[in-house]
Length: 67
Image (cartoon, rainbow, N blue to C red):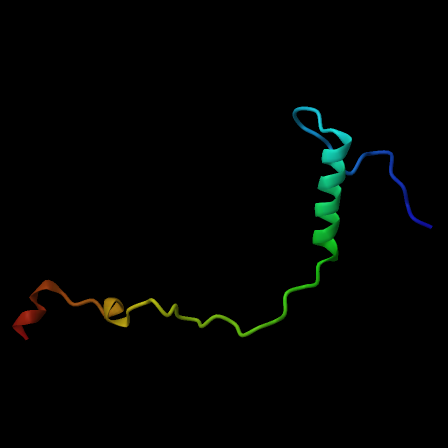
């Protein structure tokens, strides 16, 4: 037996939503809940591909050119 609640599930904060607008919103929300979960594909690499490793070189002090 489904549990019913006295409080509404959707509340209009500003303005006045018509019955058609509430029905459209309900359709959108229900379609999102019944949508299949995205397929587990390959994960993203740990390092972004656009990263340039030469920019992350170890720190060199200003007088390192004298070595």
